[in-house]
Length: 265
Image: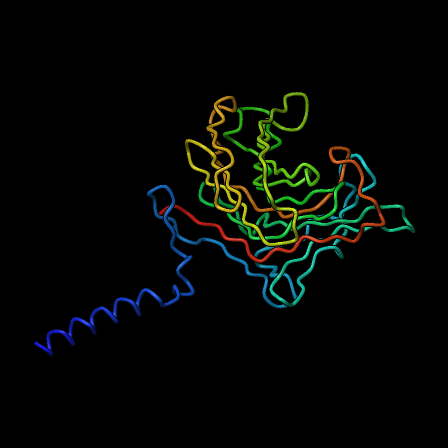
C-alpha cells in the first residue's frame, strides 16, 4: 500500500512540476489561430548593431507627405539591445522633420498569413508610427484590391484621443483610389511594448491590438482580399493628417522588439 501511495504522490509531483516548466523557447514558431495551424515563415528580433540586409533595406530617402518631413536613413538603426529604433527629429539648419522607415521589398514578400509586430509607438503628438504591407501592384487601378492592397496593420496618429487606426488602400492613389478603415480605442501611447497583428486570408482581414480583435472585414467593396504577395514596412512620419509635432518635444522614438510572420500549414 505504501508503495502505491508513494507512486501516486510521485505522479502528482511530476504533473505539477511539468506544469511549472516554462514553455520552450521556440514554442511560438508554430501557433494556432481560429482553429488553423500556422508556421513561422519570417522573423527578426533585431539582435546586434546592424540591420540584417538579407531581410530589410532602408526606405529611399525622400520628402514625405504634405509637410516638411523627410525620410533620412540616419533615423533608423539597431540599438544593440535587441531593438530596431525608428526616430522622429527636427533639424533646425534645414527646417526639416526627419524620420525613417525600413522595408522587406524584394527580400521577403508573402500573400496571406499572420503578421505581428511588438513595439513601442510615438509618445509625442503630431506624427505617427506604422507597420504596414505594401506591393508594387498597389498602384494598379484595375481589379479592385485583389491585385494589390496597401494594408496598414497599425497607424498611431491619435495620441491625444488614445486610438489606433487600421486601413486598407487599393486601386492606386489617383482619381480611382479607394480606402476603408477602422479606428479603435487603444491604451498604447505609454512608452511600453504592445503587439499589433493582422490575420489575412482569402475571405477577410482581421486586425488585433495586444491580442484583442479591433476590426474584421472581407472588404467586399474591393472585390475581395489581396491575392498577391506584399512586403513589410515599418515607418514613422508626419503630415497634415496629424498636425505638426512641437520641435521642443523631439527627438522621439519607436522601438521594435520583433517582427514575426506565419504561413498557414
